[in-house]
Image 1 (tube, rainbow, N blue to C red):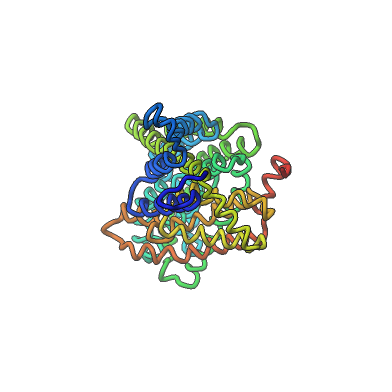
Image 2: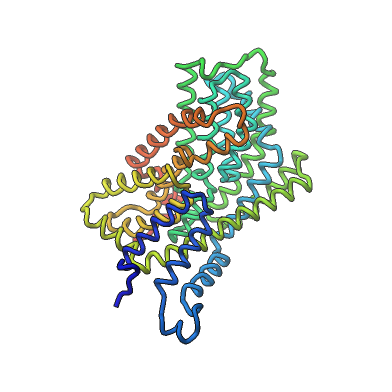
Length: 462
């Protein structure tokens, strides 16, 4: 006989569990420990066996065994090994001074383009994103480097802020992306195929950002004034600097991505090689010292610990939620709507977009996306295409207030120079660019499925 809590059935308790999570997170409590605490609290109820309590005490409950098993599973997950290695690679690149030189070189090389500094900032963000995948690091560094340069050149504050915030979010889409490593572990998908699926859509989104900036530069030059070309060094010097600053980092990134996409190494092995390459690159530019190395190790450890505990908490939460029948409630709800596949896709993306207003991408990805995953087979939707569509959508979670984290990263480093409202207004046009990219991907799904099929062959449908 099903036990009840305050007269509620198990599925109803699961819904209470879900809404409790949203409410507590909105109060500002840490996500990972909120998930774990709610998982243990509701799991204790779900697995409660009064007879065992009477015999062995209050700790005779399967929820404690589940937490231990989930912790062990996270520690031995070979996919997640890549997370700290890619983080370390990104932090070393960030602290080595490579990006500062790269931005200056790209800025001079693109000087003849309309809104050239914005385009240079976006190119630098895209390249930096492939080396780190850490949105906070990209937005913070570019907020200190490119934002003041654009303002000094006469750029509109709102426009400049939108460029930095939008460019910084590319790190969660362009591989090697921490988001897709997490997604792969969560959805039991191949991280290599996910990286391949994300590559073309990621480049297209970065390109659309640049196109938008060029259009602004052409039609609204007062927002993005042209630089004085007379102040530029000779072309030969520009190209020499570009090769010196652009090519080494590009080679490192292409080697890391290349060995992954060609199947020559696992993401973890490629990340380890990338981390070593980043250290060598920092030595090449004479910017590696004990202080930078120590800070990189510390930040990597802190970020990795947060991600691992996030997984422990989310897997515990999801296990209890499913045991109580929570996923079944959502599956029956969607199945009962009788939706066509395109209607299901639009509905799920609207839900994820709306969740982006109060929640961060980690909460959306780990808690809500698994609700939709079992339904993909029902509607005949390719899981890799869906993953990239979600990845594009989650770009907007960084650009939609009140939890637009990229805005807060920029505000944190330019607190006296720009209002939060100005940053929010500047990000709005880039939201529409993301929506255009999602429409393109929906109508041309091969943008996400063609490269994985070419590199690894068509995946057998189960």
